[in-house]
Amino acid sequence: MRADAQKNRQRLIDVAVELVLEVGGEPARDAIAQRAGVGIGTLYRHFPDQQSLLHAATRHVLEKSISAGEVLIGTVPDGADALRQYMHLALDNGIGAVNILHPLLEKPDWPDLRVRAARLMKSLVGRAVRGGALRDDLSERDIVFGLTRFARPLAVGLPPDEERSLAHRHLDFYLDGLRAQSPGPQKPLLPDSR
Image (cartoon, rainbow, N blue to C red):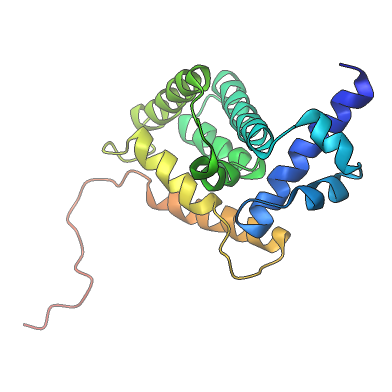
């Protein structure tokens, strides 16, 4: 594929992800082409039907997020910090679009990405728990579903920048709440009335 054609294809995918997160659902093809700065014919040449576009957008977000996490495993020695950085990068990479698009896809299965994602999450969560920074009952599933909740648009009409800023803020609250607690007596929430 020529460089300019590859650039247009990537721009269409990036815009599709942006619009999915903005509208909280499947964006119109005309809106994607317009925002990408290409004609509708260019969009149809790259993605002859809506399924091919949605699959490409979903796969792109997954690959980008998984690759970022794999880099962090090799470069960030602290397990809890690596997990936190991964989750924030996944938000920035548009991981929320995967949750929105998944039910719209006819065949949402990428065995190669599932294997990589499972290995990544096992490594990230395992390192953080073994290092003592996070609760020992934390599972990969807890992290995946927690991230899914933070990555979805709130559907209240916030500007995209504000939406993402809130997602990052709430993600930090969540991760701080998962920190391992030192053993000791629990203090009652309310004073004893005896």
